[in-house]
Structures are given as C-alpha cells and as structure tokens.
Length: 198
Image 1 (cartoon, helix red, strand yellow):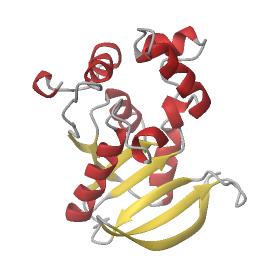
Image 2 (cartoon, helix red, strand yellow):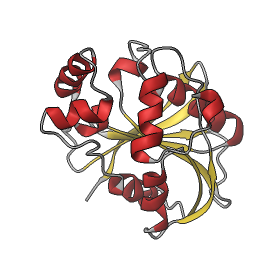
Image 3 (tube, helix red, strand yellow):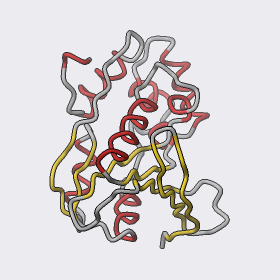
C-alpha cells in the first residue's frame, strides 16, 4: 500500500506548497508526490492535475513537448485557486529516460512519438493512473475538477470512487517543434486540443 513517507512546506516561484512524498517503501528514492496549495478547501471539489515526470521538458526546457509549461501552468492555477498536483514518476509515458532518448533519436529520422515507441518494442503509452487515485484516497479527496486534455485520465477518475465534477482544459500553444507532437496526441490518443493552438 502506498503511504505518506515525508512532507514539508516548500516555497516556489509560484507560491508555497505542501509537498508530500508517497511510496510503499521509505527508502524509495523516486517517490510519487502530492503538491498541495495552501488555500485548498477539501470540503469543495478540489482542482487536481495528474502530471507525469518529464525531465527533458521540466528541467531542461525541451521544446519537443509542453510538459514543463503544463506543470508551471498547473502550479500557477492551483496556487491561485487551490488544488493538488499528483506528480507521478512515469518518465517518457513510463518508458524511462534512456528509452525516451532512443525514441527521440528515431524521431530525428522521421518517426512520430507513437511510431518511435512501437519501433523500440514499447507501448505507445505505458502510464497507469491508479496510483494517482490511491494518493487522492489517502488525502481523502472525494470530488475533483481535473486539469487535463487527456481522456484517459478522465476515464481513470470516472471508473474510480472519486467523483469528477468537471474537466478544466490545460492547453499550451504549440511551437514549431512541438506542433507535430501535439497533433499526434490529438490524432492517436484523442487528446482534447483546439486546432487553433496546434
């Protein structure tokens, strides 16, 4: 069973958040995280973002994806409106950074993000959001507004014991490099993206 291993208040450029590390084992160096805004009212529907780790986008500001910008936008939104970011250690749609860089290399040869994963014998998307539901249950969150463009995340919530009050879009405008990546998200995964920003 996943459980709280450590927590502390962390001041960031977006505001101060309560950061909680979740894992089955206290010696886990890669725990999942809950990032909770100070003004969160748990008696009302809670704004929630399920966010999967992306070292290239979040740390190195890669232009190939919008992950870093989505995380920043989510932190800003929940600081202003209250809420929780469930940060999941599922790098590269859960294929890991080494395979992700191998996939990037194939993308340089003309494959899209899905084709590159499949060429490597990997799933197009191997993420699992059940752990996010577990974390919300530990936090006793019952009713949420989900910040996402991904219908798969919506499905995980609607099939759980947590009530989905609404979906809040979190769309980042495309750049010249990310446009194809975002189009693949829309075409292959059915992400709810507006064509104007894509």
